[in-house]
Image (cartoon, rainbow, N blue to C red; front, side, top):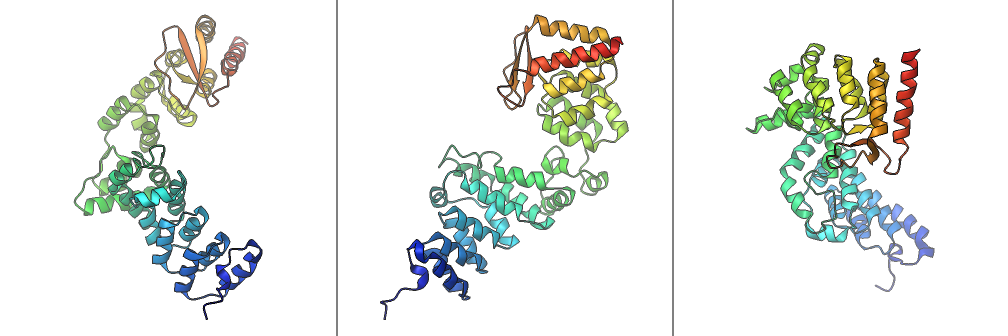
Length: 354
């Protein structure tokens, strides 16, 4: 007795298939949890985890095991309540040291992606907000992690997924707990329908929107705010939108194209052409809108006179000198952007000249 080890205890790769087949026949959850923690071969442990239904044991494995595949297998077996708890947790130092840098971020994003109900997604969003300080402190253990900064990858992924339903549920829970919803914060701006905003007491009036357009430096704010306005409100704000674009804000091409639909006058187009900095695609969009040949000639003359160069769009440069004109591109090494912009302006000028 005691001389023979269970088949799953083998550490020989040649017997891996036999060990996995033996685990396939095990139904006792306690025994499967034991195999998942103690089996020498990773494939055998993963097989045991894939047959587990004990949520407490799965959560324990997902938060303590050092093997990436085992943790993710356990995550995929968890119910939504444990997925919320896992993705929104404050990690222990032991957990951080156990995992390779970057893996916990992927684990949490996976857990968040498996959540399907609006209620659970709203709960995870609020839990991430509640644990933000602790998650930021966890970054001190491995400072090169990006996931536990002011907004980690998991929180960003959750915000990206949250639609009107999840935002409304989260806002209702905040209000039910005696809190307030900041109309300029994420929950306030993600609740898009006027009916829901009125029901929750969240009112983004024109004065607030105008102030946010003027004060917020990020194009992401405009990206959220602009679709919330009806056509009349957009026209009322066209002066602010014009200034927003003339200031050379870093906006996505899609948002830029929609904003300039509400900009009035070729003079504004000319001013935007001469503004630093500019995205290559946005310059192309502007060139197609310009109908004044003199504006295009002035723009081409500026390209010839100034020290024109390119910068990657993901890294905003310092404010340039007066004699420089920056064209932002997606590719850090794409120095052909200036030539493409010049060719587009010359082609449009030929069209206008007939």
